[in-house]
Length: 227
Image (cartoon, rainbow, N blue to C red; front, side, top):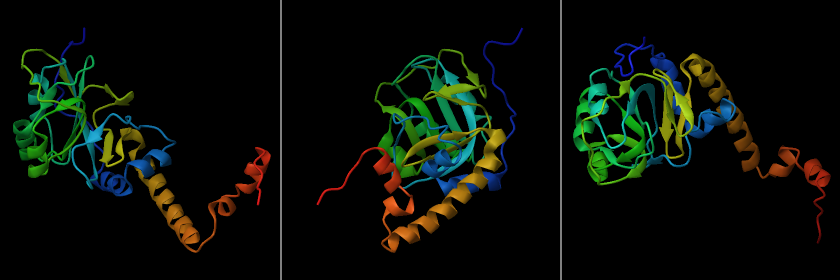
């Protein structure tokens, strides 16, 4: 019978080069490139601005109001990872703050994404530890309840497995399954190239309704022009 609570030490991770390509593309481009999938919702807000990261997910399933398993997760993190913290029922408690960030930064973790709350937000910005969270709250937590590390979790309605690539920036958070990461990077780069061409066309003064062939669609929908 499988254990109910477990800390998985070793997981597969994507190639660093693939992660870097996804980081360069950013959330919106990656989301569009993979078929408008993987967006973890508008509730995840950045604690900082003008920051873009991507990294393999180390996942945490915690009891609400309890950050014990975040402490347990620190040990299995590697440089470049993104910690993804979820709770087994909705919670806005401040489960994460400056001291945990200090511990994670010492392991080379580049950021945290959580469906719960964080605290010490000014200190996190000052130390350069990047966070996307559902809430900000001074409400503290305990360290008393078991959970799991590196198991599949759900974040903002999106399934996240250990090693999936988490891309986060000012637009939010998108999750790319590990098995699709390289293809996603290829698709994102093709989309960026296409957008570069489109940008030049629009910059020249060509109207979007002409470039995208939308006049026929407007007519089909019964839209008319009047002077």
